[in-house]
Amino acid sequence: MAAATLKDVAARAGVSIKTVSNVVRGVPRVSEATRERVLRAVGELGYRPNPSARRLRTGRSGLIGLSVPDLTMPYFAELAQHVRAEAAELGLTVLVEETQGDAAEELRLATGVGAALLDGVILSPLHVRVDDLASAADAFPLVLLGERSYGRDQVAADHVLIDNVAAARDVTAHLTGSGRTRIAAVGVKTWSAATSTQRLEGFQHALHEAGLTFDPRLAPPVQEFDRRNGLLAMRELLALPADARPDAVFCFSDLLAVGAVRALHEAGVGIPSEVAVASIDGSEEALYGTPSLTSVIPDKAAIAALAVKSLAARIGSAEPLPFEVHLAPHRLVVRESTDGVRRPLEV
Image (cartoon, rainbow, N blue to C red; front, side, top):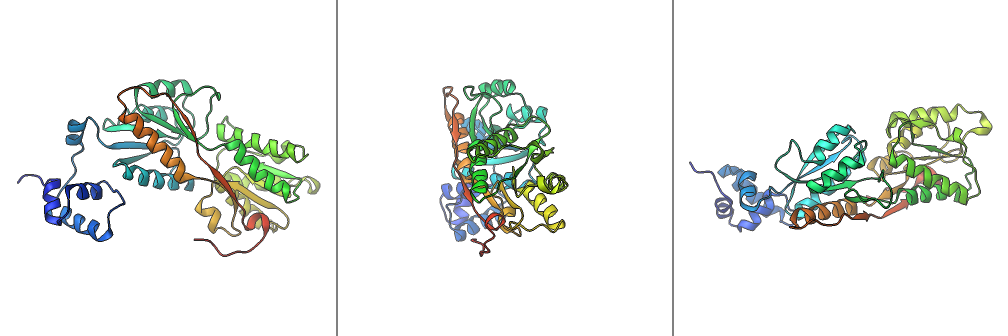
């Protein structure tokens, strides 16, 4: 029996071939009733998309890769959802890969090796060398996410990011503006990391602008931006002499802040009456925790849109395009962990 085609599914469902294609590719602009009718026809006919046939016909598979360090981190999980939705609008399917920050794996995925059907890759790198990424971007459609670990005048590939220095300065200025004078920074990594370095820079700028001095004792090192490291760092801060302890903590990620809040809770320290807590990420954990976290929210939908559209333009161009850096917006949302005002969740 011949394999079912898009035309067969369209005839069975009573819709156009284009509508069937949109449903199969996950494009959201199809009514739920139509989607169910098409999917029912797909199941009845046993239709299966054929990416190899598409590649032979167009030279492209319609598949792109999204490679992130850790999918258990809420930020990357939420970002992946936005990338998938944006890609579907352009008729693209997303294959998500987890690198665990391994440099060799990051480079393998950046070059499309091991995934021959991919048309291009969106990569959030941690450890791969910038020179290697520059070579990869010359040979394969590539868009980078996250902070730049290279000079501001050097562009190794299309890059989408937020202004981390400004974001850190905004949240720290909020803390100094509320009268806090001994502000800790939880997120200074034990190894070189652009995110940590830039957020520390913004933190120190805000302290200077407020006439405060940076105290290295209030910046305990962490290995990762996770709950455990936030817990351990906050315990270290609470072990300082009473006159040296912080009255506010800026955590470089929401997960660090969740750990810090747990340590403060264990010690019976009031938030924010004794210690205010703020962070960066704007994750669901920041919204639903108790207290809810004041956090800088990167516009993840904008990051995804800029990344997918940049990659699509590079895939569809017959000529090499100049590399560009795209800056996505961010905003500070004040919640209970710094102002103490109880409010219903805006959901």
